[in-house]
Amino acid sequence: MYRTHTCGELRINNAGTEVKLAGWVQTLRKFGSITFVDIRDRYGITQLLFNESLNKRLDETPIGREYVVQVVGKVLERSNKNAKIDTGDVEIEVSDFAIMNVANIPPFTIEDETDGGDELRMKYRYLDLRRNPLKHNMELRYKVNRSVRNYLDAQGFWDIETPFLIRSTPEGARDFVVPSRMNEGQFYALPQSPQTFKQLLMVSGYDRYYQIVKCFRDEDLRADRQPEFTQIDCEMSFVEQEDVLNIFEGLFKHVFKDVKGIEITEAFPRMTYDEAMWHYGNDKPDLRIEFKIQNLKVKNAYIEYLNKGEKSKMFNRDISFTKLCSLFDGTDFKVFNDADTILAICVPGASEYSRKQTDELTEWVKRPQIGMSGLVYIKCNTDGTYKSSVDKFFSEEKLKDFASFCGAKSGDLIMILAGAETRTRKAMSELRLEMGQRLGLRDHAIYKPMWVIDFPLFEYDEETDSWAAKHHPFTAPKPEQVELMSMPDRFGEIKANAYDIVLNGTEIGGGSIRIFQRDLQEKMFAALGLSREEAYEKFGFLLGAFEYGAPPHGGIAFGFDRFCALLGGQESIRDFMAFPKNNAGRDMMLDAPSALDEKQLKELKLKVNI
Ligand code: ASP
Figure 1 (cartoon, helix red, strand yellow):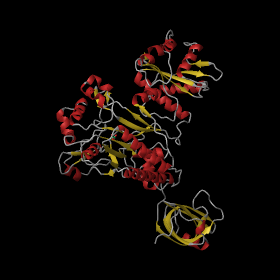
Figure 2 (cartoon, protein in one colour; figure 1 turned 135 degrees about the vertical axis):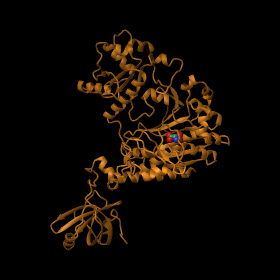
Figure 3 (spheres, protein in one colour; figure 1 turned 135 degrees about the horizontal axis):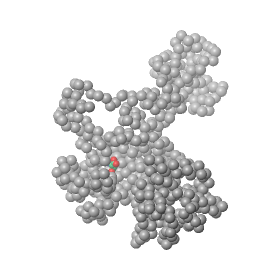
Figure 4 (cartoon, helix red, strand yellow; figure 1 turned 30 degrees about the vertical axis):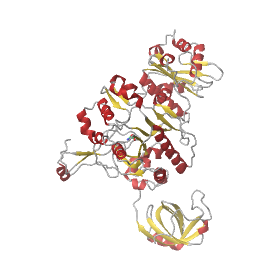
């Protein structure tokens, strides 16, 4: 028997018992004739005491950091207890020990705060994983996984595996490909998601499928992306959007309760895609920041005009159109006059920003990533006065009207951006998030989940001058808009029963109600510019399956890694994966990808042309 207890198990009530422990040496501290050694395993850390006689043996067979040792000894109550660790009341007086394996000095310290840089830690990931922060992340990931399975099992979902060596699935990224030795000159693609398989399983009648599954996308890696990642992938038959939202809101709440002990009782807010873009400038609003975008002028139209006849939900207060126009009219302020869009945010408590701070924010919006030419601000001072960066053009009276128009309160700093619609809206979305960050509103301990619904079916791609699927080509248009599928000039109006679940400004899942009729699916492929031949060559299997009794169906997939990271209160998904890749898509430990040797290339009939 290697051990009687783990290194995290012993307590004061074990005092006096003989135990056997095994683990890794965390630290050694010599004090004259005695030595203290901390040993660690997955469960915790225990202090060992090597007294005089054992100390001699320790001199003969020294042990070092990260050695694997086994000790026998008696549990003693410690004189100076350590409240920081679970075993801190006791120590083991060692009577015998054995070295089970020696270890080199690790290239970085195996401590909560380590001195190792990112790349080094990735190269020695097995050592990095010994550190508490990563260990906790792995534990959390396992618990989320278990919790998801428990919930879905209870709801009657079956876990069914789908293949990795497949034909390309169009999720919008590039495929990773695998050459086939047995089929010369031909390649498999690794799945970007099991999308078509889960739909085929619905055709098979396996209503309620799920899988916690690896997906592969060959994309340029941003900080928070990995070429292989995990999805909680789900599909259901005979469901409408409402059914899917309910089941998966339930999943989310279950995991929160189970893993975090947080009970969310209220229903998640739902917002249409249009509302999200209007109020937040993006389709994944961070609701921890309460202030929204104020639309003053949009696409060269004052808002009242834009929404005429459409008693829009987007406005929660009465806006006097005449008053709004009068704010802009009759001034020489070209920036506003020439802009097709003017947007504002009212940042609470920021009216006291110094000149230096507002200058710095102006520089911030001018950064190439944000791309604005300047920032206009109005300070709503607490003494009731108004000061702005455009005092030359606007009287204090007008500034006051601006402020009341924007719904600003005393102490707010109104920040205004003006320019072309898409760029300005994106910039305002970024500025809102930045200000939220600066004000400390993006607190990891606060969770604001929500649904974004009614996504557009298509997205216009300026570069290729064509329509692309906003979600993927299997998403169904809203039933009442099906006839628009034959009117390319109206594609932009078509909405889908497509939905994203968003948590704290991050999309953690998305899905849709699917097309399940062959002719509509053919229409969809045609709208995306695929000829009939191409559509059948690529998706004949699905179109064929739709001829054999496909049920109405829909589903969703959650980004499992990201979900875990958010539950762990962290930004990066990398530290929630046991063996991630770096930003260049390399596995630093395996040194992959790597070249193939001549023999392999020959077998695969491949020539490398670089
Ligand atoms: N397959 C989709 C994705 O990976 C999710 C879904 O529509 O279920 O984004």
